Image (cartoon, rainbow, N blue to C red; front, side):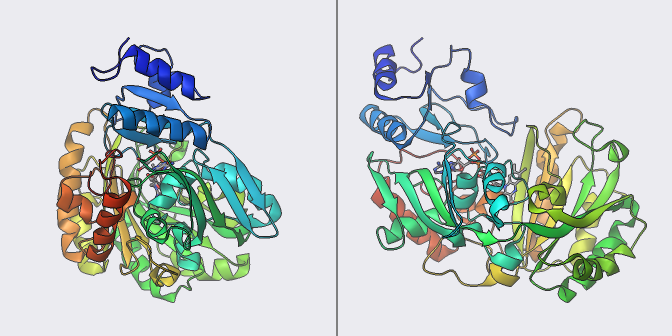
Length: 461
Ligand SMILES: Cc1cc2nc3c(=O)[nH]c(=O)nc-3n(C[C@H](O)[C@H](O)[C@H](O)COP(=O)(O)OP(=O)(O)OC[C@H]3O[C@@H](n4cnc5c(N)ncnc54)[C@H](O)[C@@H]3O)c2cc1C
């Protein structure tokens, strides 16, 4: 089948002849699987998918698209599918699974399709970790070019702070080694500016010496939400940077991914991850153990390989819509405003609202120039709703209402990884400071003047 009126069967064949990986068009049996995002509410519909196996494949794909004047998008795991890809060439990086760990230099080089869980499986046996976020099913590259807010961010800063170099194919088809000396502007853009400047084919970053932590989660009855949130606020200032807490209000559906005793319940989920010993960890957590009678408690010493137990994010693909904000405060007034919409008495379709304290090393200025936002904020706030009947149709409105209620406590900014569906240019620009946005716009004009990379949450798209 001819996929698009500007792309002929001969064009598709020419691409297939120039690459090692598969070239897939809408009539092929594996088209749906190859293009599927983790967020099932987003249906990508590219004209052609290239299952790239290495940087040469990516470069050949980009040169091919450049000749045809067709747009290019990229997907590793689909965890960041906030808007649909419509037409053009989708470069799927899921086959690019190389992981090279140097335990002496304490670095890892990973291919564009690698997920955090595979990095940790390779590094933790050496007593080393990278700075993953709440779910290790997320792709390392997509997360890191968005800045990467790690579970242990207060202790160690953003994931993009640890990047040593990128290998990137820019829209001119050139494979570039990008580090702070060789390509300073592109290096700054790729550390937090997301995917508008080129397709990263591999990423080299520093590892940290750690293999265990003290952590997990406590589930309280949702009826105690006001008391738990108030106690959380009193407790936060007592914690060192080595302790990373967060709190979520969860209306758990009666679905399989939810642990049996919690299905269908409204709960408050305290997450705790501490870089230190179990005695200190237990002492730090003690005040929160007295707040209410937990429904479930799973906190203790753990191998870093079990770090997903801290947030317990769903692993399987789900249809959802989300939204995020950066907050300067989450005081009593903010908590009251939030509980009015999602507290025990509220009738809300939202699955989750989450508040993650920032600060600590996340507030330090970067080494060199970068494009990360959130260093000046106190909390990351996100909300998620499942787009399933009967609640799905009420979700977008409920997200807007919660965002509006939190606005007085917001810095006005967002993190690109937690922004939700990108809107118009003014809305997308909220993911960066005005200075960073101006630098990103200039980098876009230099590296992608024809706006080849125009999908997702980007600059100048
Ligand atoms: C369950 C869950 C938990 C999460 N937890 C966190 C968290 O704790 N901290 C955090 O910071 N974020 C978190 N995120 C957000 C996540 O980091 C982003 O959605 C990220 O974009 C996912 O990257 P991916 O490659 O897995 O997704 P994909 O959907 O495959 O890619 C998303 C986008 O990343 C960019 N991208 C991907 N690959 C490349 C490439 N090779 N070159 C250039 N750009 C590329 C593109 O813009 C692409 O559109 C979470 C998301 C989910 C769904």
